[in-house]
Structure formats: C-alpha cells, structure tokens
Length: 354
Image (tube, rainbow, N blue to C red; front, top):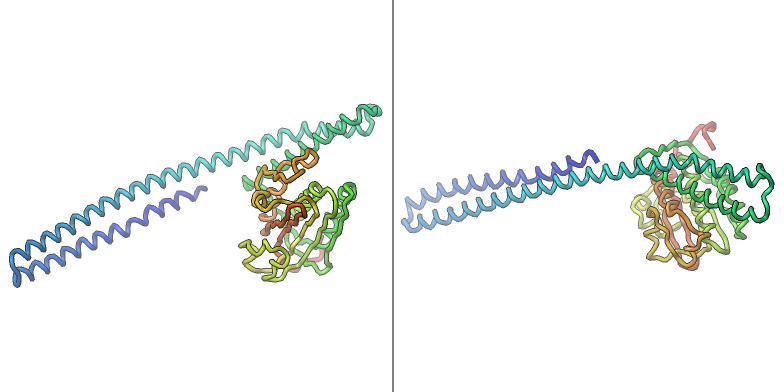
C-alpha cells in the first residue's frame, strides 16, 4: 500500500506532454502567421490581411481556453489523486487494525477455551466422580460448544495472520501418495460414524511436490469435513490425479475458466467429491467468501452450522501454495472441490521425503 502514491503521481505527470504540445502548436502558429503576413503584404489586399489576423486571433483564443481547461482538469485530477491516496492509506490502516484486533482477541480467548475443554475432558473421564445419566447430556453439549468456539478462534487467528501476511509457509518435498492416505485415515472414522461410504483413489505414480504439508493437510481436512457435514447419505470420495499441461478441463470444467490453471503447466488435482445436498449455481461464487454460509435446504440445521471460514481459509492457503481451489456442484446431487497444486518440483533427496 505504501507504493500507491507513486501510481497517482504517475497519473498526474501524464498531462505534462500535452501542455508542451500546445506550446509547440502555439509557436508554430505564430511562425505560420509571420510567413502568411509577409506573403499577404506582398501579394494581397489589406482586407485579406485583416481576415488572416482575425483567424489567427481566434485560433490563439481557442488555444488559450484549451490550455486553461486542461490546467483545470489537471488540478482536478491532482485533487482526486490526493483523495485516493488518503483513502488508500486509511483503508490500509483500517485493515491492519482489524487484523491485529482479531489476532489479539483470538490469542486472549485461546487460554480460557483450552481450560474449558480440558476440564470437560476430566469430567468425561470421571476425574471428579462418575457422571450421572442426567449429567452426561449437558457435559456433552458444553464440550460440543467449546470445541466449536475453539475451532472458530483458530480459524479467525489463521485469517488474521493471512490478512497481515504473517502466516509462514514452510515448503518441503512431499511424497503425495502416503501423505494423502494418512490424511484420509485421519477422517475415515468420522465418515464411518455418519454411515457414509468412503472411497480413495490415489495412484502410485503421483509425483513428489514442493509444498507446505501442514497447510495442505488443513486444506484437505477442511474439505473432507465439509463433505461429511453436508452429506446426509451416500458417499465421499477422495481422489488424486496428475494433470498434464493443457488438460485441466478433463478433471474439472471450472478449471478451464481459471486464469492460473488455464495458463499451462502440469498440476496435481486433489479432489473431494460427495453425494450431498449440493450448492445452487447462483451460490457458487459465494462459497469462498469469509463468514459466508450458503444455505441450501438443510444447511441451516444446527448440526451443520459452521463458522463460514473453512472454505475461505482453504482457498487462501491453496493460493499461498501457488495453487487454488475450484468447485463444481449440482443442487440435490452433490459437490466436488478440487485442490490444484503445481506438479513441477525438483527431484528431492530421499531424506527429505514424507
């Protein structure tokens, strides 16, 4: 944001060449007048000479008025540029203050929330005596609410860090097949608990890529969690595909309309598909917006409530990893979210592989 004033200054200087051009025309006009006047004195009449001077006078007046108007426009543009510079600086300060506030509040909430969750665990484990059947329900509700709030705090903190440019990326060379299988095994119990079928298609030929494994894990867990949440029955599928240069539309039609993906190069596509309630076409543009919860059918149920940050954070993380996320969905049929990561990575030493 600090470089913005230079852009406005450049806009103001664009008017200077035209001012010089007017001056050059003015000088040229008088040179032409001198030559014409000399010719008329030798070969013409006084009336012609007077008409010539009258025409030149009108031309000079027009040039003068044009120059005055141009200087007025230049002054107006300079004033507007100054206003834009001020607004830009104020917006930058406001965004920075918002990010710092969110980060500070999140940090302050972390400790008491961790204490609440810890004491709930102790209660459930019988550290203070066995819970009666009447007490189990309220304790479970406390635990659910505390976990929900803790997840919200962590997501807000991540968002604040990303907005402030403070979220670190630690790139490692990752062997994708075992990595993705490990993430799938982490969420599989949740899928089984919901009575959904879970299929995984991870080819052994997947390349090693340079990425941040922590952020990539968070993206996949978010997408799989979303699929579980909005799939009342049916299946969830996790697949990985190596996409050659120029072949992105084969995996997801939406990718062909994406400037980054359509620009070429080889990609790894990690796709989470479900047979859930789906998303209306008009709502697809909103699913990655912060604090946005697209309500389609039963999405408003308390069991499916969310923070509205998971997908926004996932896309930002994907872009930090030089990739992106696309979505395709049909209301009442299901959704497919695809994480795109560049596949062009150097061959790593064996010791660096995950």
